[in-house]
Each structure stands twice: as C-alpha cells, then as structure tokens.
Image (cartoon, rainbow, N blue to C red):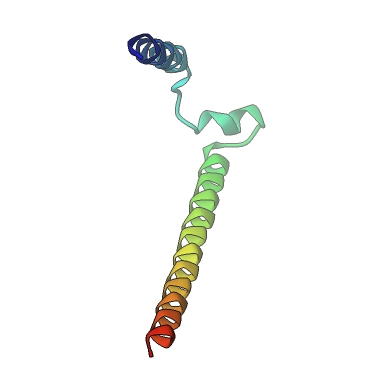
Length: 78
C-alpha cells in the first residue's frame, strides 16, 4: 500500500509541474481567434451563469424529492 501511495503522489506532482508553464490568463484565448479579451470574458460569464442556473435547478429538484419522501413516510405511519 505504501508503494501505491507514493506512486500516486509522484504522478500528481509530475502533472502539476508540467501544467505550471500553461498558467497564462484566459484573456489570451481570444487573441488566437482574432478577437479582444472581452470575448473570452463574455464566454466565461456565460459559462458561470449556466452553471449557477444548473445548481439552483438541481437544488429545487432535490428539495421536491425530500418533501415527497417525507409525505410518503407520514402516510405510512398514519
């Protein structure tokens, strides 16, 4: 088990060191397509908005299933 943990740590460290040179800010992505920084910012904003919407939508579904489960247990005990 000790060898597997060490291998996992070494692999993770290697990946982190290889990814370090690619840490430029995301504004340069738009330059490759011939656009300014605002295009990348708008894309990130849209992605953030969609992800927040998905999280909120998922919470509503979870709350509804919890309420339905509570109703089912109340009916069984009555």
